[in-house]
Image (cartoon, rainbow, N blue to C red):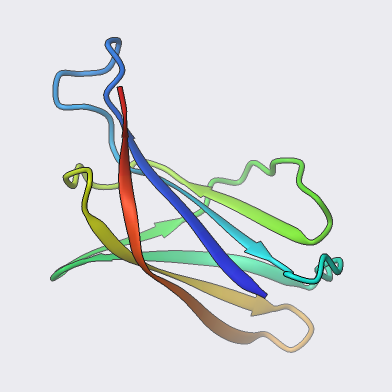
Length: 114
């Protein structure tokens, strides 16, 4: 399995002058397109920007995805600069035995919508 991460801040004209808080979408993807068992969950996200850390719980809403993808969203992150790169770490739990695993993505850009 592989972690994909997408991070952005919204600066559309309807947003506050200094933009909205950071949003992050994490996807756990089985690269062989094999269904991910229901006992595997994404539990928590950690985003590291130099010496700063954003620890985020995921929103409860579920989005429809393919059976080999788990997608979770975190909102209300910090107002870090855009066009920088951060490290994203997610905690994955196997509910069968409560095992915890951590996956990470290095050099993930924070993008800007405008």
